[in-house]
Length: 369
Ligand code: CP3
Image 1: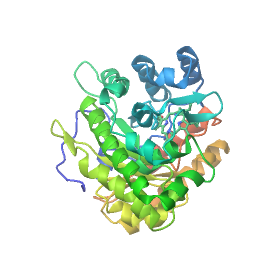
Image 2: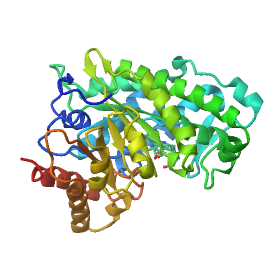
Image 3: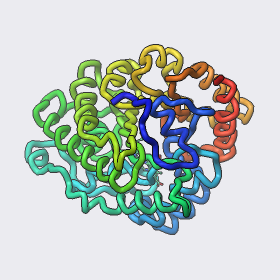
Image 4: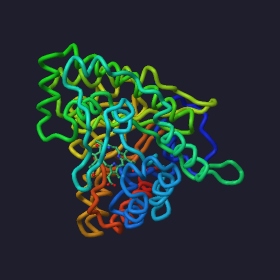
C-alpha cells in the first residue's frame, strides 16, 4: 500500500533506497542498477568460471553472496540485489532449466497443453532453499558487528506473465507466438498457469522476505509485448494477485514492493493503482511526465537507456543529469530511485558505471532544498 510517513525502517548506515521507495526525504537520489552483478565485471566472470556455470553460481550461497557484493565494492551503490534468476521458480516446478553457454535459458519441459497445465503446482519452497540461504548469507555479509546493515538487500521474482512466457516458449522468444497462441486459443489454460504462477511467486517472495530481503521487486519484463486489454487481463491482474498476498512488513519493518513492466509506460496509471510502492520505468518514458501522472501514489525507479553507458564519460554524465532533471526538484513526498531502463549490458565498460553513480549522487543534491 502507499507509503506511511512513520514507516519504521531497519537499522542501516545507508537507508536512502528504502526512504525513496517510501517517499521520505533523502539527501540525494539513491542508485542501483538492474543486473549490477554480471558479466560486464571481470571479477564476476572469474567467480562464474570458478562455479562452472551460471546455475552452479546461483545455487551456491557463498558464491552468490560473493557476486552480489562485487559491484558494491567497486561503486557507491545504495542497494544490493540478490544474485539469482527469475527462472528458478519454473525450474522448481520441475521444468528443468539450463543455460547453454552463449544461448540463453532453456527448459527441458514446456507447458503448452492441457496435460502439462494439469501437472503444474506451487513448488515446495525447499527446492528453492539455495535462494533463501543466499539471502541469509548476503544479509550476514552486509551487517556489521553492531547489527547495522551497509545498504538494504532487494529480493525479486519474475511476474506471473513473464514466467509463463518462458514456460510456454521453452526459452527466450522474438515473437511470443506460442505463448500468445495459447492465450488466444485457450484462455482457460493460460489463466490456470497464471494462477499457479501468482501463488508461487507470492510464496517465493514472502519466503525471501522472511529470510531477510528488505524490498521485493517483480520483473514483468515481457508485459509490454501484450495488447491493451490483454495486458490488464493476463499480466496486471496476476501481478495484483501477487501484491495482495505479499507481506507489507516483517518484524515490524516496512517492506516496499516494486513493479517493473518493460514497455509498460502506456499503462503507468493502472500499474500505480495496484498497491505497489514503486513503479520501475524503461527509457521510453519521461520521468517528469510520469511523476505528474502518478502524483503521490508511488515512487518511480529508472530510467536511463543502458546503451548510454557506451558513450564517452562526459556524455554519460550529461545523460544522467538530463534524467535527474526530467524528474525535477524534490519535495516532501517525492521519491525517485535512479536505475537503468533495463538490465546493464555485458559489454558495458565498468568505468561508465562509476561516472553514472557519482553523477547521480552529486547532481541530485542540487535538486533538493
Ligand atoms: O540484477 C541483478 O544483479 C540480480 C541478478 C539477476 C539476474 N537475472 C542474473 C542473471 C536478475 C534480477 C535477473 C532477472 C531476469 N532473468 C529477468 C528479468 C529482468 C530482465 O532482464 O528483463 C529475466 C527476463 C531473466 C531471464 C534470463 N536470465 C535470461 C534471458 C538470461 C540470459 C540472457 C543473458 O543476459 O545472458 C539469464 C541469465 C542471467 N541471469 C545472467 C545473469 C547475470 C547472465 C548469465 C551468465 O552469467 O552466464
